[in-house]
Image (cartoon, rainbow, N blue to C red; front, side, top):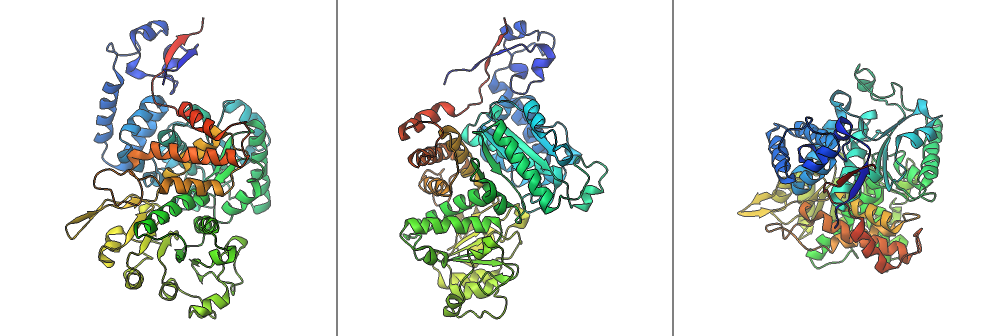
Length: 561
């Protein structure tokens, strides 16, 4: 890869203030002379390796994760190349600091930790001049936009303007994990108010001090946003992130036919979970057919998993009705079934038929508990998207383990405090037989002299490669089968670090290769289905990707003549 050459008119302190062009102590002598930097920097011109040693030493000196998060955010604000190079070289150690679980605390404390604005804040009172804001405050070339309204941040609820930490973190992962050029990404916070009274009463809160918009006005504001985004960047990919369960699925369906957009909480989670299931069943020499899946939680993530699992079963030859019978959703009111009158349209897609319930010995006259469903269905896999810590208790897990030789159990809720179970408990309650993946990072479990690694069912293994494939292929739309292609590519990735051979998911150190494989699979599927803005062949996708992946290397700077 050749070194980028950038021509700039910036000089002196203005150049040092540009996070992409700033090299800090690494400016060579000729650039110090050309750009008026003498006297603004210490005499010694550092190599990037020297800078990495210095910044890593500083990172390690921080006493807790939130201090480390603040350090990384500040580094990103002043020197993007050094930031990405540092995290790339220590990716397994730093991603949990940069994103989940630490980003949750950072979002909660956003208004108190605020140092420098990043991205776009589109507030409802500024709806009128939105087109002007987009024209003036963001660059012309944008490939990926990540947007949130801050209402359902991880498992922490309504954090208002503090939700901006999520789009910023997601886009950093796009660059780290898949090489998206950070200059061509845009984080957006739609500030439509907050119903969090603690935030509204906080004198330091930075967002619009107003209750959340009512449904009709909210939808009009979202429509205005989508219209303006589509007009400003007609080929950009729009990722919806951390919208409430009442809006996430609805907004995806409302807008996905207009522009290339997807919801990572729904579709990204579905793809990474499906990849884990594929890998787990392959471990015990089984396929997806004839499996029974129970999901605790029936929100957006569960609906996404169910939808993609059904699509996978259809490709294996099952009829739609037969495929849906394999998915059993349990929400706070019990089993989702056709006898309930409180189901929204998305839950209704997975409502179990009453005759099917009766055939399994389940009564339909009362709420059917998770324990009752597990006892009756005898699932081969149990997934948690509930945000209810400890819901996978000893009684439930031992019941499942009594009739399944290798129970597949995925407590997927984030952050760690919301996990449905701790992996060490799952290992103990199943006598080491469970095949486990978690939503949050957990250390390997020591069990009877063995060290059992816990794979992280991390969306970072899916969405960066997905975004790279969509952007490189110039996708017009994002149908669900693209996520099935991504899941298959992830499940097929076999490399593991020593000691992690049995892990259901790759190590984070392999994420760039994983993302490249996913991008190729997704890009080729786009071309095959005629969904590309460009006239490409499947082979050209691989060539394009080779040149599309940005690397954190200092550019050569040249003065404007």
